[in-house]
Length: 124
Image (cartoon, rainbow, N blue to C red):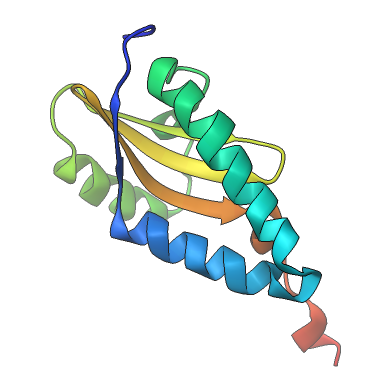
């Protein structure tokens, strides 16, 4: 469906994730979050609305753990025929989105540094 604009929908979880990113980046000052938001609104969302395929197919990742496989089955049960779950990696974030008909549903966003291990609590 490249070339046709998809209607963006932002899930409550996506909005909560943005709030968490804002809190996470607060020690760096307000500009870090503003820059991320500007890039998201001005570049990433418009690009994915028109050309959603740059995102990798989320369900193509091999899952080896039993827990992961159970979660995958639950996820697949919630998806409808024709749904396409994808993830997009930008310079500073990882975005999970669902293509459903003429809509692009933004499900989750994480700042790349939120994805790192927090080992400080082990060696305090």
